[in-house]
Amino acid sequence: MYLFRGEFGYMLYTGDFRWQAASKRAQIGRTMLLNAIKNETVDILYLDNTYCNPSYSFPSREVAAQQVVDIITSHPEHDIVIGIDTLGKEDLLLYISRVLKMKIWVWPERLQIMHLLGFHDIFTTKTSLTRVRAVPRYSFSIDTLEGLNSMHPTIGIMPSGLPWAAKSVIANKNPFGSSSVCHRKASKGSKVVDICTNPNVKTIEQYHQHIYSVPYSDHSCFSEILDFVKLLRPVHMKGIVSSSCSYVDPIYYLGHLCRENQPSGRLYWKPPASKEGGGTVEGVQTKSTAGISNFAEAKQRRSRRTDILGVRVNRVSVLRRLKRGAKIVENELCGLL
Image (cartoon, rainbow, N blue to C red; front, side, top):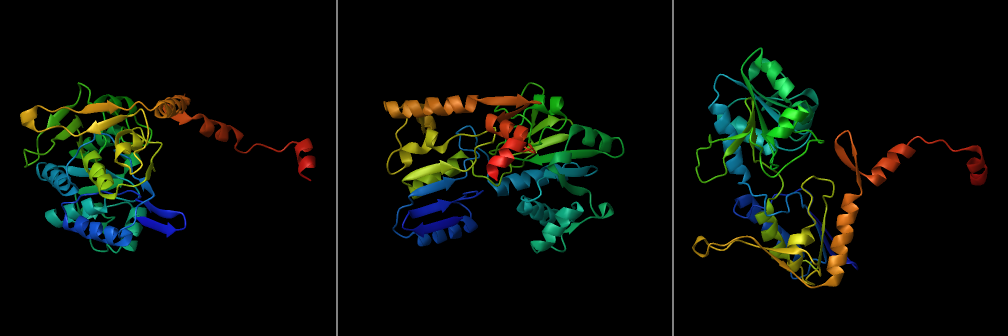
């Protein structure tokens, strides 16, 4: 995280972060953060709001990593393909390598990045040395896996906190790319496969005969974001993610935790009560007309989007693309001179 201090006050920028207070590493981070802030107030919190919605709840990275290992060990005769980005999920790959005592294949550019990060003996570009391969997310598709299965039994694992629907898997052929559509509930074509050794943890989802989705994420789920905001109680708060299909303005659910109690007509989330009380998720709406106006304007802004090849884009982005490479006509050039 980055903490800025000056005449403007205290500004904290989280970046992509996973706030797991139970782990020893997180306890160290918590202590360092509180020591840096001391008794001051965070005036503006720029928050990783990737999963800032009560519907997003998933286990810790340690538990999810073990789920991935469980899938691999339950398919001893299969090759394993794991979809990852150019950066990230290193802890997951290191865990797999350590527990299964095997190297992991990565593509050449990713191997260079791993070497820059100090990992020299764990990753390889030789497919003959391992049956576990980490491939670019954009190449992780049903077509690819079906092609691999025509040569050797292969399964794919997508580590992500997003609940991808089976319908988009079949329709898009590349369900985990940046342009895919996410849904909160899986369609009828998907099934839940209980491979995890811990029955108290969210089960693994299989959206295709060759694809498993595991809720491993480097972003905080909603309960972790809630704990983090409760700890800091900032004066103001802004989300740093605005283009994700899971986007939610953090003020929507957490504005009441700010020190100035952000005025809005938004829903305030309340944690479920104990089982004895039969609690449910409730919404409480304030009477602030200014907040209602702001919410209506934000909703209207979000609706001003255009569908291009199935991808929703902002009107400004469309105009920028249209203007890209535009020539300056002669009279405009004379005006500039």
